[in-house]
Length: 208
Image (spheres, helix red, strand yellow):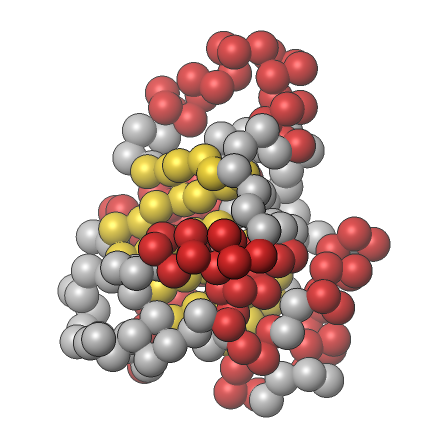
């Protein structure tokens, strides 16, 4: 386990890959999905149904806008889900992650979901919180709601690293040399894939 050629099963919770409207992380995560598939990985993206970015896309382009991902990114596997609460959320996450090796959570998804993914970290399930987008007041509030120490690690931009350094041991914090606002998504995604696979090779998920 843990060799370069290991095929890991990834579940990636994002604000949206269906739409990039009002969603600065969309291009990076689309490109990350393509990069992971290119490297022989199995990745499934999950986003909340009728999320704000998708609603904005529908207002701009109507139903035709929904074909963009299918036509331009045919290799990406994705599903939508209804927001869940309490025990129903925990049960659904348990089923969803039962066969996963890696779970990635983009900062900005439902805080309750982000909380419980961290709580479900196990030796056989590596979990990473990704905080890579330009800072904003709404994201600053979300950081305070999530116990990032429950994750296997946090991957963040240098701009927000100081806030995590106060709450996490150095072994759990990775400052990514990625600037989604200043470089092409494909370049950032390649660097992020390199970083993630390096982390998994160093500490691979245990066999259940």
